[in-house]
Length: 74
Image (cartoon, rainbow, N blue to C red; front, side, top):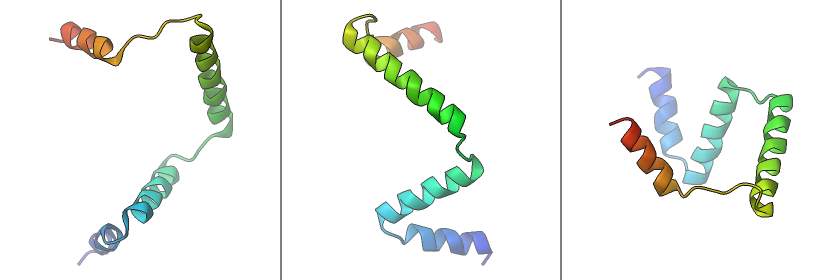
């Protein structure tokens, strides 16, 4: 049995919480976090929340967004 198959079998036998942690660590190993980019996204998210809460911008319901996408790409 190849090494990766054995690893997979071992991994899927773990409790769900442990599998999630393993997945997160594997994904992070393929795409390590970049502090500058993470900080930029954090600031951007906070800015957008403030804009929504202040009424500066309006939100669009997800159903409408996905409906528009479906119409556009039919």
